[in-house]
Image (cartoon, rainbow, N blue to C red; front, side, top):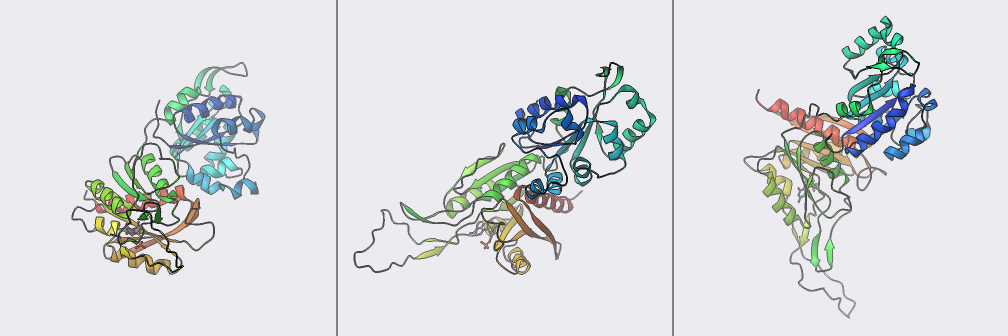
Length: 407
Ligand code: C5P
């Protein structure tokens, strides 16, 4: 079994005896390289402890909607947005009834309403309950609402009955969850620059900045999960390479430009996420510079670095080009200016003056600006984890590309 690395699967566990089998499902999904998070209904916890899933997934298990501490971490709407795929297993008759009516009276049903993930449901109940017209009606409604029903199977039941209503085995559920899905970025080639550049002054010193690379790495990971081929041209950062991404390490802006030009051929989207140093030393000293004994200062001559993104945008065979604008004020004005001046297709303008957002942080907020014919459209993206922001940016870019491509 294989999944695209990093596929994010949310498992919602209902109150059925088959809940104990979900431990095996979580294990199989983790082994296949998925990110897995678990939400349990109150009743589910009578069958198996949240701690089991915490140990298996390495993530906190959410059990309540009204939990200020958990909400302060990944809030329920963020969790709903986070998931690529969502499965409810075991799905009891009661859960199915509540979902079929669009109720949101606990964390799990609320998440289901809020999530645009691909949704699966593995019913598990007594055979008479499954055969009841009310359940049959709810199952039809859920299928109509876009849920994919997995099972139930037929056979011995915990209550002693024999018939339809057994939850499918974890292996069968995992196989469906790991099967390829509609991948909006399949066949697309993305080139992304990330992190800072380092401009040598001498063999031991350099000019650089505080970029952590997190935003570029989040974009690379999410683009792969959407099916794209991704080349990540990275300045020096302390981040692991996302699974499935081809990473090219560079140091200076000149090296980054050379790598970008080499890989831009045939690329569909180019994202300039790197914080490229605007200047470099006019000439890097061959040997370590020594300070004078007379206490005098020093003047370092700097020259402008090439503008990587503008160079790519100026190509005749240019890809769809997305740039970033880190600003401390007038986001929209500077964002629009950058879009036009560098001839970009889209700009992600973010305010780096707010505490907890932007440089080095895990969260960010941004204003997306993109060219639509002669007009510039815009969309505000509120504070959220950089991986969710990456999804929103890619979604908009794919939408723009699909509108631009001839039928
Ligand atoms: O001009 P400024 O640095 O504000 O522009 C930011 C955008 O341009 C980012 O997308 C950044 O990756 C890109 N850039 C570049 N090469 C440079 C400077 C910025 O690709 N030399």
